[in-house]
Length: 154
Image (cartoon, rainbow, N blue to C red; front, side):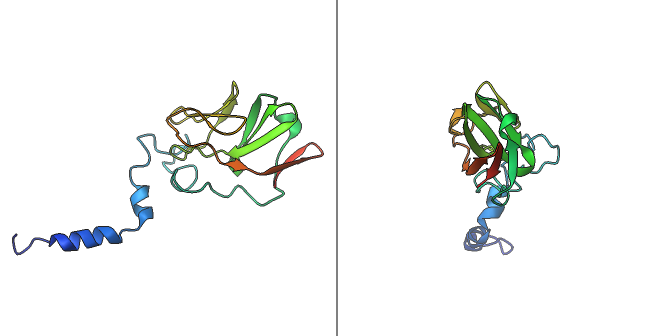
């Protein structure tokens, strides 16, 4: 060791003090910018895919009319980061629209699955489970109420 070298103990101590959030912010974009196609370079959630989804809004926030959600399909409510689906007639489900792979915002519901444009993950409309990776975790379910033809956050 030279007189100018930093002792190994100092380097290890400094590494241990780096906040976990700083460590997870690095390397999360996988080369796609992690921006859900917005071109900003920022994840759609404002955080990492391993964090809890962003708050979707206060209870009572109107997401859609029931007539807007086709049976066997759904609708992405991008400003609330929620996807609302209707797997069977009269059965409405809602999930976070933030992909669990790297935090991109899903962009459409096609052929019974919610699609993420960043890396091709697909999620089932009935329960948010993974239909095709690279995502390995389901979309978190959101609680909604249906009343008078309106779907709102519960």
